[in-house]
Picture 1: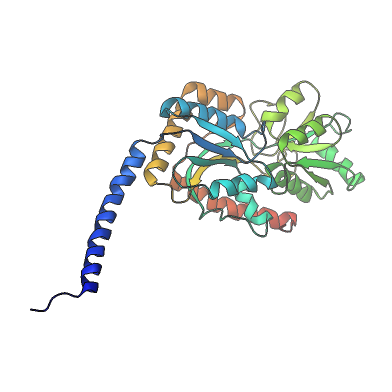
Picture 2: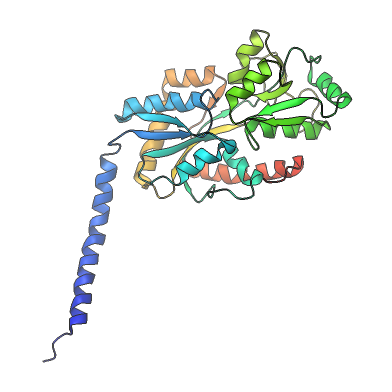
Length: 333
């Protein structure tokens, strides 16, 4: 009788061992997800403290902390229109303990940067689009002698390049909204990019910068106190906060419609069970009357789309942002 060779015995035993490990992997994964979360979850917000996105991030994070038994902690990682914090989220272990909570700059950045340190689609597992917005308010410092969008456009045409607008960086929502407004109105405004939102607001309210397309969440208090003047809003409908402020579309700038959105992702490779669990908890959080009222009262529209719906939405938004980038003539950096 021919005895099996040593090599064949080793290979056979290795095969049995690998099969045993492979069979055990689902059980290990199930054990990991069954006890999730077993420690605090890091929510990376790639913009500075006080940015409009913090409102839904903190409201939802607080509710998740209550319902899931572990803290969901907001971590601000700022810079480069959100790309620094987004890269940190993309490269985090896909274990469910780091997620990204960001805004529409995520869809715009592929058109504004030549080479991102991550793939906007492939490196992330969508959780949900948490909310939409009504767009940004076109606000000016009271020293600017314009009380309507038409008057502002006329002023800008008379003073080409002399009026400055602030943003949180190239590709940020205020930048995209203002650059598209200028291009469609046929005016020349000078862009002054900042590292974060707080500094831009301070300089616009202080009169160092004349104009900005600012989030209603941030701008409304200053408008109502007279420290800023609102001329129009960039979305297709008026904000319930400032119903007397017309849409820029209403003022005659045909086709102008720029709104933003906020959403959540895990790093790609995060177990699907964790993605589904967090999605379900976020949807529940958005249905809680106190949470929903808080979001609505701050000028946002709660959504809670499915991961599949959000993935499709992002693909379409990336294409839309590419069209806008081409229209406003911005060369990727």
